[in-house]
Image 1 (cartoon, rainbow over the protein chains, first blue to last red):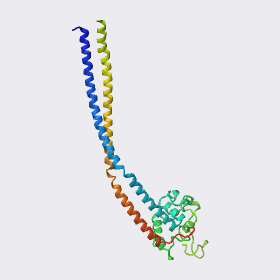
Image 2: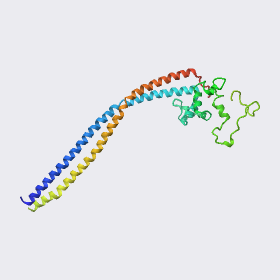
Image 3: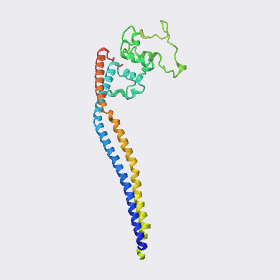
Image 4: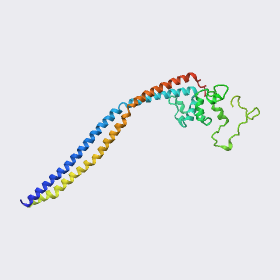
Length: 189
Length: 89
């Protein structure tokens, strides 16, 4: 065999071997890819099937919870009035009154009284629950909580700056009695 | 004869390296895809497993409805028991 023929034969054999080696490894890799994609498609199908009814269920839950919130907000506004209701919400959840009540557009513009500055959150909650709360129980005249003249506003009138932002200007403790300089309405204290 | 030599050498020194280079490039890219696809399959399986609790939303829905019904009943009682707010309060 002439030398060029041998070189040609060797070259062809090497090319065929390189083709076989690389193509076989490529086929193996592609088979692994196909197997992984089959698993992925099956898992994605499960995800689609499982998450299909989630949207409707969540929307239903949200609708019921929204109706409950609207009913409770309406009851709170009806019983406490818009200002005190906002003050209660602000006292329990500071900053929440800015959002207002969802069914009362004017609640966003109503200024919430600073009820929580006079009463602690626990007392405030108990007071709003009914006439037997500690605040009302101390009043011999019955329902003091929802009486505008004897509610939190009276205490705020006594100490208008209860945050003590200006300690040097805080008034002295109120003097009570018939000879006190400031005569408060009967029943306020 | 000279052309025969040139053709043989060209096949051995030019065509063979090019074929090997191209095939190696295809193999490297195919092998690079494998771990990525297997990772995607693993994540998809994990995502499917995470949604196994989705049917419990039906229980949550029932509980939410019952809770709202109880709250409505309680609110109705409060509406009867408590006085309404005075005007201007």
